[in-house]
Length: 205
Image (cartoon, rainbow, N blue to C red; front, side):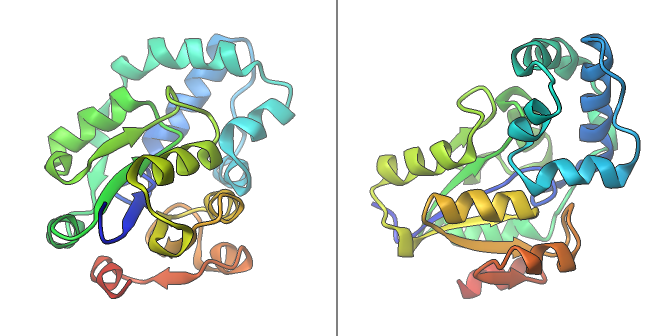
């Protein structure tokens, strides 16, 4: 059993991938006959909730969307993604004492590709992507059970209000980073347990 269990969102926390993710969603929507998301703000609104729940509420067939995503993901231009390199020494220090797992709405294929490309791969014990389960609540509960940690010793490190809400429903601590997709004001309205201004601040948890 690790000292603590730190669950990391991927997009926005470990990598700056907003443009890539937004483009991939719109390509998938067009493939299944839906209009693209109109604006960046409208796209980010989808992450006030679980992403898959949000698109389902719009009437989008999630299974059809995922089938399109499986075809689109290998064709994306991952060269536009930038890693949060300041996290590398932080992750190395955390890994020596704690369990680290990625919990994301992205596909495990895309996550593994970028982890290897940016040197993050050695630090994570597992990846629970969209192919594991759509619900981050279920993924968090699975990770807690697998690693044998309780709620007080499990943190979800994330960057959207929807992430905070799902983590709270799963009964774990939440740490919202300010360099991700949602601005600080949105994050504060969702009431995380901690606000993380820079990667090194994670060590204070």
